Length: 446
Image (cartoon, rainbow, N blue to C red):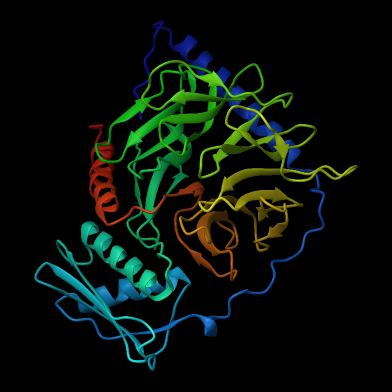
């Protein structure tokens, strides 16, 4: 990411600074890990049965695609529809979808012999074949259009996930394709998306501690937040309007939530959290009026919410008298109704809590499961899981319990799902420039 400068000319002094901040980071991690060894205060239950039977999903029939890339086109379209978990395939369905790719034109039609749904058709401009990143982006847009035609709700094919593996930020399409690094140096943590989908923010470990870094996905330019010259600065997120960044900042003192301008002007200002000691992992309600976060008050980490001015602090996850509990890693759903989080009960599992009535539901049970992040449809989450004894990212359908593997590199964690990347334009821009950025950074030209 950034070149480490030896400011005082002493290698020993530089090493001492690195050691101090490494120690701070380790102490912070150990404090959380120690809390994780206690039991949580609610009797766990296994995830309930699937709420939506496959036989009740709308049925569609895919005809054989036409054009020189027919097989690849149908394969991508079929996979996108399957991964949406909103439709099923049936050869005898009156609802028929046909796609064609030829001479730089991609077209799709949907007809319904029963007359229940109006016929639909759309054309797209496309460059290259389905193996090309830009072409895949257009096919994903087509797939999401089909899902919306059939169900009234858009699919999630035209979205991406960023995550950390080996200290680098990586990006992958929602179907597991096009997995590549977007940073090449440094040690990154906790990436998060700009609401436009055109940038990410993350915590970057260097010789002065952990600084907050922004990466423009269109230009590949990385900038460090001037408000974080030193100390411990972690778990950054953009505000829903994209104008500010909120993160946890500390060092010798417990971390507080602070806010700084994303345009890199001015200092960070503390967001009041009353008498709560140490706050981190902020996540915003979509309207930007409330923020959820974790605090170890009174004893072990719990999830709280408050107004963005620090008022009206409320504990969201319950504390049971006489029983210690541990809950962390909150992520507020895009529809604003629920928060996914990780909870410890001998091992870590992913849970969900409805914000309105505070009802909690366990979502996972096999292996260790952590780091939930919502898809833009507020139905799927990406999680870190060891269900195959190796840390990979998997996608979970919270309505049916269906799971699918997303990544295949050991040690994947701290994933963040993008917003809808809309109309192909944003998706296409990030697809092309991130690929270039990855190539440039790997060759040392960043």
